[in-house]
Length: 347
Ligand SMILES: CC(C)(COP(=O)(O)OP(=O)(O)OC[C@H]1O[C@@H](n2cnc3c(N)ncnc32)[C@H](O)[C@@H]1OP(=O)(O)O)[C@@H](O)C(=O)NCCC(=O)NCCS
Image 1 (cartoon, helix red, strand yellow):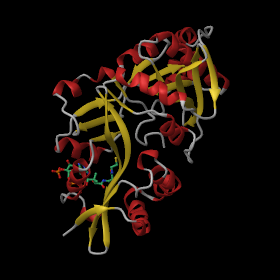
Image 2 (cartoon, helix red, strand yellow; image 1 turned 90 degrees about the horizontal axis):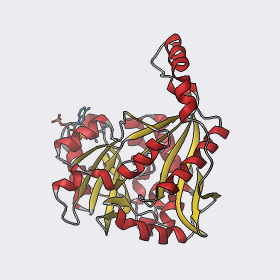
Image 3 (tube, protein in one colour; image 1 turned 135 degrees about the vertical axis):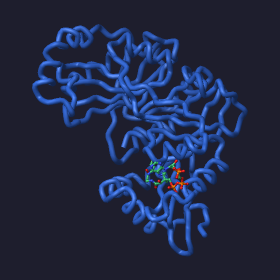
């Protein structure tokens, strides 16, 4: 019989070995690099053991559910939320109900249990357990060069033809425009961003609290990636930000807008941030810019700024326990603010 309880410091080696068996060597090595930061330095978990549940059989560890505690703003109030991240069961013990026990233990202990960007098996388990399925977080792409429309699964001549045919459209959406507000790069988030979050939080039906401590942990202190941060300023005040990075993919260079914040009613502000990122992406020689955005008002501004909505595989499930919400809450996530920066999606 297995028993589920909280992680203890001397579980670390056995958990690493199980991770290697379930996810492979490369993923295990990458996880080891992030581990201290991801689990111990999370400001929402200060001074406590990481929020990880372990399934034990005798002295053996046969499963874990590792999670990320966050403060979650739900319809103006703040509750304790938890992103479920690295869930795994030993291969020889899968499909015997252990995963379900781990999911339920986690859910019983948190104010909201949340999942983003799920594997096929965990998505099916969430469905089986009837977690509210919010759907994928929409993905938006802005092409900057004709290479942007290439597909790795198309043969070379098809890719060339598509590039040539779409060049006039790409030229129109990628043209540079003058900037409307002040945008500056910053190295850290100061406390004015906590004040900004407190002012904006009531405007979102659902969003992780983006205060200075969280933002610095997530985007300044991450050991595995380097981000650039742009602050939007008006009347000598910070009124928004964008976090982005450039990377190589098999078919070209991409700039990812990982996270951003502005007043959803401040169209000019978000546009100014997007113009800034356009220029940065061009300087980095990117073929396209990609982002994920749930909020309807933000998505409209992206579309007006030359982004196209494309198929997204970043599934979102969410179950709010600590406060009462009705079904309509999950069915209309138009005012939810969820981005690629949420959970541990940007690995
Ligand atoms: C996801 C995981 C933790 C589930 O644990 P588990 O102990 O197998 O789950 P349970 O036995 O409690 O539940 C089984 C249900 O999960 C889903 N499921 C689990 N494995 C599945 C698979 N390989 N394919 C499809 N569905 C699967 C199904 O809904 C299944 O129900 P069914 O057996 O009635 O069809 C486990 O499969 C695992 O470790 N997977 C590999 C790692 C992984 O993908 N982690 C998720 C990262 S987001």
